[in-house]
Amino acid sequence: MALRIIDMDARASITLGIFTAVAVALGMVLLALLHFLPGALVLFKEAVVAVPLGPVYMLMLAKVPRRGVFLVNGAALGLLFALTGFFTVGLVAVAGGLLADAVAATRGYRSPAANAAAYAVFRLGQAVGTYIPFYLWADSFVADLAASGRMDPEFLAVFTTSLTPGMGLAVLAANAAGALLGAAFGQAMLRRHFLRAGIVGPG
Image (tube, rainbow, N blue to C red):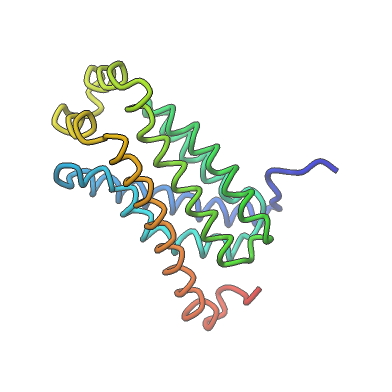
C-alpha cells in the first residue's frame, strides 16, 4: 500500500483547518508587530514568533495526530507567501512541512520529543525560505524588493549589511531554540490544563 502523505477523515480535516487558520493568522500578526524591531534584531523575529505559536501547534497535534498536519500548514503558508511574491518562502515552507511530518510520524504523532523536533524542523523551514534568497540572489533579490515597494530601503539595509554567514547561523539556531521552547511551553500547558479539563486525551 502506498504511503499517504495526508491521512485525514472529514472531522480531522475540519479541526485541522480551524487550527491552521488560527496558526497562520496569529503568525502573520506577530510577524507584522515584530517588523519594527530595531536594527539586526528584526532578523530574529521568526524565532520570537515560534515561542507563542508553540502551544498552538502542540494542541493541534494533540487534537489531530494525523499524517499531513505540518504539510497542510506548510501549504497554507506557502500559498500565502507565494501570493505576496515570496515564492522561496512558500516552497521551503511546503518542504519543511513534509520533513516535519516525517519526523512526527516516526512516533505516531504522540511523542512529545518527536513533536517538538518536528515543530522545530517546520519553523526552520520557514526561516530558511525567508533568508536564503539574500544569500543566493542577493543583488537581484534586493533590487526586486526595492522596486516592488514590498520592503522599505531601511529595512532592506539590515539584511544587506547584517545578514552575514555567521549571523545566518545564529538566526537558525535562535529559530530552533525558539521552536523548542515554544513546544515545551505548549506541552506543559497540555499537561497542566487541557488534559485536566478533558479537552485532549492522554494518548
